[in-house]
Length: 102
Image (cartoon, rainbow, N blue to C red; front, side, top):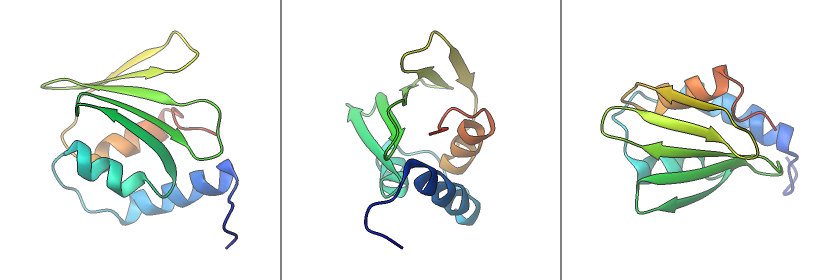
C-alpha cells in the first residue's frame, strides 16, 4: 500500500477496521487513537471531537454529552443525535448515515 492514500482508500480501510474492533465502552482518547490512521482528528477537552477522513475536505464535529453524541457536519446544517455507549457502535452509526463519506 502506498504511503499516501486517497480519501476513498482511508474510508474503506476504516470500514474494515470497524468490523474488526471489539465493543468497548466509549472513551474519547481511545476512540481517537483507534481511528487516527484513517482520520485526521482534533479534540477540545474531551468534549468536542473534530474528525475527517484523511484526504477529505469535509468532516464532522462530535459533541460528547452525558447520554448521547451530537454530530454536526461541517459546512452543512444537519445535526444528528446518537444514543450509544461504545466506540464501535458510534463509528458504525457514522458510517451507516454516510457522515464520514469522503
